Image (cartoon, rainbow, N blue to C red; front, side, top):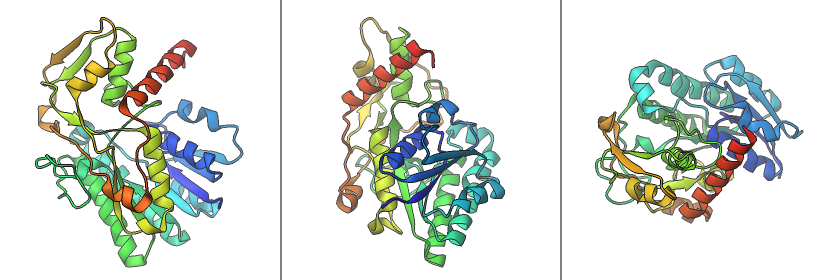
Length: 317
């Protein structure tokens, strides 16, 4: 059944893939983005689609959020957020405003319009000290930055609306997501940064000793998870992780990506206190409830990303 869906952060890296997934499934999509982190390029291919419309606006503005909900929205996917750990340490207020106040505006709009909500959180809310095993949804939380704290506060607010107003809310915590349209500068993910540097023949710089591990989820698998989980009646009131259940060390990742004469170097970590040594997801719950599992292997995902980056470079986009 075709639904009318609002997507905040629609022009962001994951947001544009969620929009693509929704349009592929025949839904009508209204997006909101302030284009501070997202970009016009990310949603360019949807511009001529009659089922998609995007507004430039900010979730920190109640008026901008309310305008999005004038379309009799059935489902909202809330991805808009400030997402930089280091920036949150330097400017905690901006993360609070976007991630907590912005989420409050979205929750109020959902409550008034009886709209189902998928709140996209982060694995960074978990206590990373004791994560030798895969992290499941019952793992203790311990936000280690204002970014993580603001995201956890947003989740708590959403849970309050679920229990207090019976608002259908699902909280989603994807692990490290990578793929086309992710930034390749310092604000990007390690897979995108390494692949871009390899294409350019630049050294792959590993912070620290490279033994730290990540659970790397390809972005189309992430988008499919977000849509499946939000639309499922079985997930209402639940928290769900998304990851592959396999982690890879940064050293191994660099070896996997490096081609030809590309040099791999180790450099001193500029923020060692914020480094997470091991990130491994336990995605069992999503598999049991949604029958969801990742389809794209790390090798295949890197190959797709490499092709996309090369094509983008050739076209000058």
